[in-house]
Image (cartoon, rainbow over all chains, first blue to last red; front, side):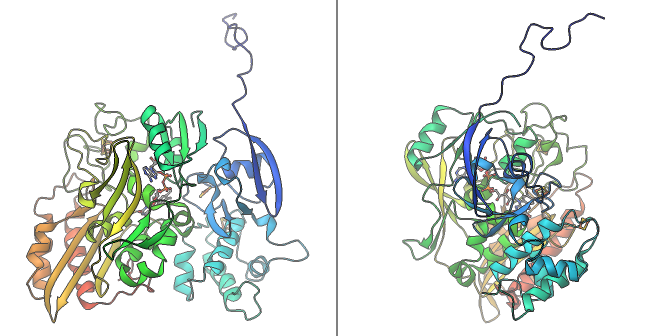
Length: 179
Length: 340
Ligand SMILES: Cc1cc2nc3c(=O)[nH]c(=O)nc-3n(C[C@H](O)[C@H](O)[C@H](O)COP(=O)(O)OP(=O)(O)OC[C@H]3O[C@@H](n4cnc5c(N)ncnc54)[C@H](O)[C@@H]3O)c2cc1C
Ligand code: SF4
Ligand code: FES
Ligand code: FES
């Protein structure tokens, strides 16, 4: 068959022109990063595809699961429903910025201690969300933790252990997080 | 998503001017609804004008002694504001009943008003939908319509307005402050959203170039007897099948003043002033509440899958009014709304 199918064969440029990009400066885990991004790049895609910060997960891409939760100026948000360009100048913390392998964040340690995951896909979002919850300081009881963690789904159903991990940190006297 | 350009709005007047000049320009605030719809190709703006850097984040006293909620204040900051918790706990409850903590940290008060229906066909560009594509037909009438409206519907559209916050704002008789090319004006909350009629593509009555700057809550006290009851398929992080905002002022056991608004049942937050009149001057008893509930659903119509909502709404109204009369809800108690 010699019917032209490719754009080149049709006499057009073989590769579509690159989308218009702009320089975006994002402060992530305390480090300033400069990126050339198309305006429609979500913060989630900027992290995962352009900065190699793949700790933050994409579950639904529509605000329905919480896997993409990060902290912006200390507040938990869904990074799939904001554009990277909108976050210029903000202070972004991802799961990579919470602790190190030798020095886990208290919530990371508690998730390990309480076996608060199975496949682990929702875990970075759960932990970032829980950090936000502790900073907010509204949830006190088990029921309140459950309600205020409802934006994070766990397909493996590790909810019971997730809640006990958070409870431990919430109630621990030494927690550096309690303000 | 289609390709678009992005700019930050430099001021309210400039934003209005730029929007007036080009109808394909869209405002973005929290982004939680418009980006979702852009990913589904339902919204295809040529340019996004970011409102987040406008000085409209304050929550402050209004001139009449009420409270002014900035359009760019987040739903979370609004719900947890001490004045909202103390004076307008019904609003606190309604906001906290919606979405998730993450989404409430992003969603703004202005954006919440403009959020579009969750009708599945509206989201699915492969199906006819009069709201998305005027004249193409309504797939929900005769299709799957479990989440759809039972009041104020039309032959063209049976979609619901999905907001929880707006149900409380309707009950509290809020006023929306708007800036447009002809200056500023205020819109009574009951006139902000509209019924579908034969133009379901319009959710509200504002001109395309108008920008919401704030929402004013009147200086009235419904902080003692109120309830926001939200019924849904799971206990949290789900839209309402039926929700009820009920607020009473009592003199002993006599109802002095009553407010009643429903969510999940109509194209707009459904405040029923006739039912409110039926409550006024009556004893706060189940019998009174039943009469009001019957009045609300007297004109209701089911479309098959959603017919259960008529009975559900009736019972929810009675329960919400009972809870309000008993004064059992407190601003700190964030679970009563879903788990009475
Ligand atoms: C998974 C999920 C679950 C949800 N659950 C609930 C729920 O249970 N209850 C509930 O009530 N809501 C729920 N929501 C909806 C959420 O509350 C709305 O998406 C949010 O309030 C929209 O606000 P925003 O600032 O993000 O708006 P945006 O998405 O930024 O904007 C929405 C629209 O408003 C316009 N706009 C924004 N600000 C202004 C302004 N000041 N003047 C003029 N136009 C403006 C924009 O142009 C756009 O068209 C849910 C959302 C998701 C994704
Ligand atoms: S109910 Fe309204 S939004 Fe849903 S398909 Fe029909 S016209 Fe579209
Ligand atoms: S990926 Fe963002 S909420 Fe699911
Ligand atoms: S651990 Fe598998 S989804 Fe939560």
